[in-house]
Image: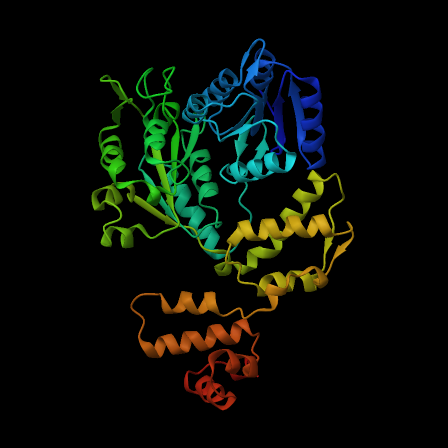
Length: 452
């Protein structure tokens, strides 16, 4: 099987005009496009090449899009599939979602509508660079905080223990999960992801455990669940904190026994896999509030891993910005622009509440608006001039076991660092006088020449 560039799509439609229109629009948006005029051709082309996205019509003379989808999801569960149909029906939509479709759109559609769907579903697919014959996650950065996280991930990968990754949205939880899979002895087996927040309870249960024909209205064929598809490999439970309480006991049983039954079936299915769960909400707090089962939390949290937010690894911003500039320039067929030092300094002043995802989207916007030459400070967004203090102050105040005197010292240090030693600006942010700043610098023994 030949790997393709990460931004490639297989477009499947028996109408030549529709294929041409979709191809032109995807190419205009920087995608590499392959087309197929029917189900059998699509299945053959997918067997020859790996695509992260498939957009397929449902009804075609030699088969249907559901058949294409099932073939794709069986061989490459990480591939996103979007179905298009001119004859939408509720049972067909239910079967499509149960079968693994990421979205189901009814024709006629505008490309803006399709592009919105593509952007939404591809956010759930971990970014990867393709090297040789395998997909290998590329995590950018060399900060101490990131190195510590990756070293813990490498150690965890050597075991078969289940793993819980906690981090803010956009910090790279999914990438770390894929990194663990690629560093493990399961790397040759499937990596299967399911977003626990994306599906309602009745669909999520079928998505995880599968169903037999006739298990519910619209179940016209048996379908294996994600646990079966991940056999021998890794199952990623993305945003596990969003899993309904009613489903949590069944998940706990699978984690403990590695066995379950499909919906509507009495036969037990046994699986051999590793489970990696991610969450952007602190599960320990959810347990205290009764929103998450304590026994499931302890079962998932065998090896906990925390991914640092971007504001705690600001030294990685330059390499990340450079990476995204090269990536989006290449996608647009343009030379990589030069990033002015003042522009990079502005990026480092920003606190990035949306983390790496926010930086990625910002660089995409900059590349779209730029002229392909030098990217200077004029491209910085107005919000980059706002107070940088809220996130660092929060980081200091939320650390457990710190005395108030230590909090005051760390808060003063953090503020002065964020203002590059400008005491006047620090005094404004903290709501105290410059004299108080000077006295506190002396009281806590902070280096006076650094803070003028």
